[in-house]
Image (spheres, rainbow, N blue to C red):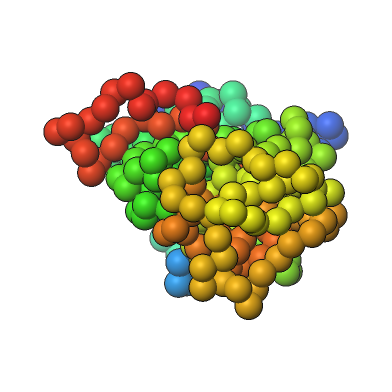
Length: 356
């Protein structure tokens, strides 16, 4: 129950308000259907983007309520198509496709607007309702203005709370879409990228260069990467964020060392690409297979694959361990370092800025 109203004849001026019809009715139903679709998409998207126990249950519950409300609106429109509500000092006249009913003023105890947007007229021995949502906005406002709010402070408080919640929900959904498709903040927990990135570094990762990815939702076996919307393909030297094969929970950050078609091998503590030693001034330590000899990969990088390694070669689990990295598992490119929480007292501000 969203609002309680009292019918007082002294406040009423005669008026008739017809249910929307024709193009207005189609616009009304289309808006409701679009709202339900967006709500369903948003709840499923949020459940996929921020997975937690019961996420799909709550998302499905919210979507189910929206679908019920849409169905109620459709059924109400079928019942009240061509109908109207009339008000005068003697009471209400509510008319629909099956006829109409007259509600006398002396029989009305109070009126209310329920969660489905219906005006419910409570009488001594029965209840009559009319779908306010099927009226034009100006007609709905004119009708309600002829009744006295029994608790104006409560109504105002509820409206403010609804507006705040609505604004927060929209902002949250937009923020999650920006996080998923445009830019996302990350934290560096290990030293695998030293000395380029240090433990405690906070950085921004952009997701436009390689194209956005739709998270794995209901009915999807894996995320859908829209590479065709990207600006360019992955290049050698890019610092990338990804999930390696077999890992579905944790994100890794490494540097792309070789791309599709490159001839790659490790020799004399260095990476060799297409017969030439790769110039890597950022590397810390020697490059070798260490404990990954049994997973050694060399030769031509297959189509749709890249090789990624940490800059701290002696302390990094990377392509030497998990093998070739499918391009479709890359989530974005490291863009900017903006803070470090592990070295606040001795923070080197010269490190902050764009990552190269």
